[in-house]
Image (cartoon, rainbow, N blue to C red; front, side, top):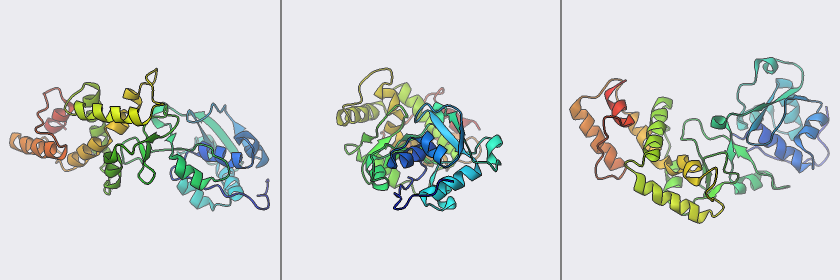
Length: 289
């Protein structure tokens, strides 16, 4: 195995960083690409890398051990930091040092990380990092310290959110994440509201305008900001709705409790009233299980 060179550089992974992202940043610190670093560590690579965020790399246990040794990071610490999804069975138990590049579907592709946080953990060369959002929060990454965020892999750089303090506030106050079921319902409901211009359209339209003003590189095109920023724009309300749904019993609510729930939810969403139609997904959640 290629030993760590004297005076080796310390490149720390970001929390939930994609393995391919960390590997790329670590290699760049030594003026190498990922393939050259893997070859130097005598790790056999298969598959075709197409670049971040569309490709992820899966490491066998031995390959991960060699990488941690070179990076001077204990294997357990490196494993906790990186968003290592379960590797294919063919390499998960392999004793050989194997790395497999595989395509990442859009729904699970990582998002661009805060540039300030990345520089702090890799001060030798400014290589963008890609991280996965927390699994128990809406699909977005928000750096409350440096006021940067992203919610779509087509956003090649994080967005400046200083003009939208409610986004950082929502992230900071999410001390008790909602259950996966409630978050799934809430994300689906707010996505439908957003796409159909319902209930919170005026607020979300203003938020979109503020984002595009603060980030002039967000220009209309095949990946319109209306679409790529959707999860970020609806982030506070999705969390609020998910938290409210968590309090519902596992059965349809009686009419009087439906009215009370909607009144309380409207207050939490800062709406004068909330009266979903029969075809509204929120109404379906209240009346069926």
